Structures are given as structure tokens and as C-alpha cells.
Image (tube, rainbow, N blue to C red):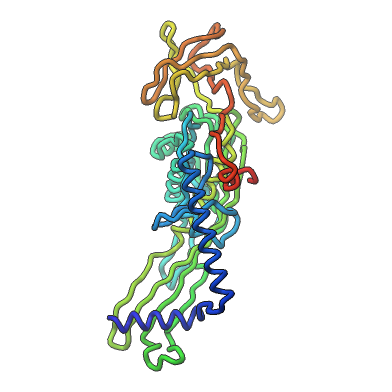
Amino acid sequence: MRYRRWIIALTLAAFLGPAPSSQAGIKDLLHRKEKKKQEQAQVGLCIKQRAWIGYYQDDDGVRAAVRDTQSTENDQDWIGLRFTEYDGPRIRLGVLKVINKSAESEERGWAEKIEVPVSGIQEMLTVALYNTRRFDVVEQKRIQEVEGQQARKDVVEPSPTSIVNMGKVLGVQYLVYGTVNEWTPDRAHRSVGSGGLPGLGGLGGMFKGGKNEAEVAITFSLTDVSNGQILYTTAERARMGEWSFGVGGPEGGGGTTQKTPVGYAIQACANKAAFKIATFLRNRKWRGSVVDIKGPDIYINAGNQQGMAPQTKLSVNAVKGIVKDAESGTILGEDLRGIGTLEVIVVQTGFSVARVIDGCKGIKKGDRVELATAPVPPPTTPECAALDVTASL
């Protein structure tokens, strides 16, 4: 077993090339190591301050600031995307069924096919959005029930009318869906050791290894349920590779095999999209509805689970109706009229109770409520501001 490990190490060294040995290379390596150490300390400080940042964290707990989402060079880092803690109302949204516009499947070998896992992509995006800590995400089972009632097919873009209707039923502010544009689970394969390596004699032929690479491209769309229109889109691409090794000669042998990297590529895409959607909605106000009225008590559809807190001030908007374009029939939005202000006095798990502090004559079930003031970001240091790449997105 020990000599097999040495064979693997020697083969990798021959395949990947020698490590840098010059004095300049060593200095550069030490400089990069020190820079990473400083960056990790800064990220740790920003986490304690609850600054508004996303960051990477690997399996060893090493942290780093988020980098460019478009580059595929750092896609492995996106698997470990994390967010700082967040206090305040969380915007409610839902994730619709994924649309597949790529080839239905890709041949793998002579018989096996890897089909596009639309349900799995939907679930990954749901989890990625939830993990931002900024959203109250509707359960996927509930989404599927409503989509079934809408009779929507996965090859058809959701219409503005269906988005408005689903938004009302689910009580969400926004709906998100993904469209798979490129699906290449077997983008490339590199093999080493199968024909023997120079300098290793007959041992080179005993070593088997290779790298499988997958690539996917998915467009994510954020829609506003008030009018059914697309509010924001982002096209994400991820490329992931995985090595597998084995040692064995004519009499057989052992080895290690890793699963296909396409699942990791999907996860990287979903995390990139969640980061950008959270950034886009960063300064948007939370919105909800009046669900019941009992005497002076006004019941709101947000509680502890949605980040609501006592003494929160809410503006009330009466719904006068839906406005449509007379010629095209396109929904333009709701006609809302401000009628007063509420203050939250009691917060339960899934709802809150508020009282009128100004106006609100004629308030009724279904009227819209939103934060009376725009979200205020937590105070931060110049070091944390420098790590916040969201300002450039």
C-alpha cells in the first residue's frame, strides 16, 4: 500500500510539473500566504461586526472575501459561500420550477445518459437563497402545489398573469426561476498513467487516474409579483473538475473514485445567483399584507420567522385595484394609496399584531404594508467596506 502511494505522488509530480524552487518563487508564495492570512482576519472581524458581506469558507474553516462571479477560475470557492448574520424583516420569495432550454440529455459512454435535474436545481437554488439569511423562502412542496394548479409546463416561460396569481396565493414579494442554457456534464476528461510514464518503468502502467470536468450555464430571473414582470436577471456559468485515482496492474488493484462534478457546478451557479439576488434586493423594503382585523388589533403576515420585531413602524397602502394596459392587456401593477402608519406591538412565530398610530381610516384585509423607512445597513469599518464587492455589482 505504501509503495502505491509513492507511485501516485511521483506520477502527479511528473504530470503537474515541478514545484517552484527559485528564491523569487518562494518569496511570492510566502507573500500570498501572508496576504491570505490578513484577509482571513479581516473577514473574521467583519463577521463579528455583522457587516453586509458574503464570504467563502472551506472545509478547514479558512475564510476569504467574495471575488468576481463571472470568473470560472474560482468556482470551487463558491461551494463554500457564506453570509454574515442579518437582523430585520426578511423578504419573502419563492422558487419556481426550472426551465430546460438545453439538450434534454448528454450521451455518456454507449448507453448511460445524464439528464438535466430540473427539480434538483430548483432545490439547490431554494437552499442557496435561504442560506443568505436575508429571505423567507417558501417551501418547495407548496410551490409545486400552486404550480400544479397553474398547469405550467417546464418548457414555457411563466406569464405575468401566472406570476401575479401565484404571488397572491403564496403571499410572496418575488418569484425566482432558473433557465438551463448549457448542460455539459462531461465537458472534458484527462487521463494520466494509463500508458506508462517515463522514468517509472513498468510501474507507470499500473497507475490509473484522470480528471472529469463539467460545465453548466443557467440564467436566473427575479420577477415582481405586483405586475408579473422580470425585475432582474443574471446569467451564471460554472466549471468544476474532479480527480479520480487508482493503482492496479494485470492482477487488479485498488483506487479511489470521486462522483461526477456536475452537481458541484450546479451548486456554484446557484450560490452565485443567490449572492447577486441578495445584493440586488439589499435596499428593497420588506412588504406584507393585512390578514385580519379584530378591534384595534391589525394582524400582519410576518412574525419572528420573517424577522419582524416589536416597535417596527409600517406604512399602510390601500389596494384600489389592478392597472392594465388597455391595448396589450399587460399588468402594470397595483394602484396603491397610502392611508396611515402602524406600529408592531406583539410578534408571534408566523404573524405580528400592530396598532394604528396615524390615519389608517378604512383599513381592511388585503391592504399592503411595508417598512415605513428604508433598511439601514449596520455600521462598518473601512476594512469591511473594502471587502464588500456588492457595490460594484
